[in-house]
Length: 434
Image (cartoon, rainbow, N blue to C red; front, side):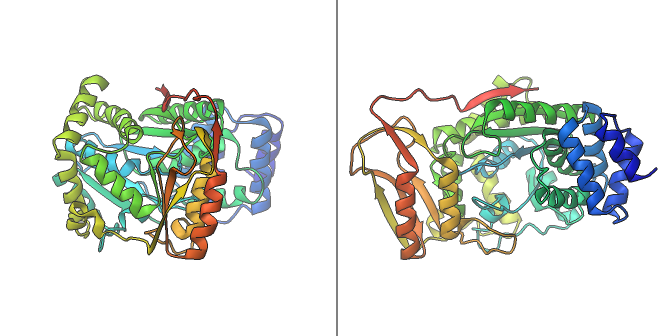
């Protein structure tokens, strides 16, 4: 078997076998296939595509290129959740303890953010002492006792994907649906869950800007999961405006705490209940999503979900008093209300720009080495469909630099569009697949 023949086969529209794909991924990961040949293969795939079976085989080959987490010592059916990412997406901070509160074993591997805002781990590190470097024994014990643990992804989790993505990033071969789907799903399959719920974002602040593209990606990932023997569903959710009101690490943690106490933003609560209902059914804790939703809603209102969150923070070294008193979390030196310079209905919010403003303030990473400022960000006061008079607040900016605050204010005003008539809003939950 040699790479030249495989490139020519794929270029001519041929279907690669499981054995050929496994050989190619193994040899590339080991450094025996040069980048220029793998680049040619990626470009051939971009032009002619991959079958469902090829995509599944590629995903499994990348998943098996490193560690495959063994969660067999954890009791029950393990269900994981993955989001394709968005602005203000603090869903896991609420969803994980909420699902755990009804008995769903949440054994989650999470990463740090790169780009608009921090990742789940960055946000959780707003708590003094919180850490995710758990031993395998601690990880299993926490899930078996309080039903929740979140650990950082190991360096050897799907290493083929990490190497391949770096190559695709510099060769113009990122935006191919099978390659995107296999990249995401290889890490999920390596993480050892029995079931997976995917939150696929669509809109201005999402990777997939259009609904057809988001639907295609969701369908592809559900298909991969099912072919690999996993119970997978995908929720397509709107990202044409930030999720909730807070954008920025500690600010999002505070909003998550509000939600766990039963008085968070409606859109965040709705998304959490939708995703959580699917997780609860997959874990066998409810017969259907209606029953699951009732259980989850009850635990938001009676405080059970918040109690699990406190225990989770304590179990991973954090200070649970900061959950009780979120004013103790990191806070920025400067806060300023951004007042509208126009009157009318908010018809559009340039969501990606809101995320970039947060990154400009220090709330995201431009490179993997960038340090995140946990305190900075924005809290929106008006979202799409709201009527605003000139001089009324659109948002509050939290900054640690007056110079950056002033530039952020100017950029934020330009990120809002207004109209004289109330716009028709798209639903938060666009579709559920699988």
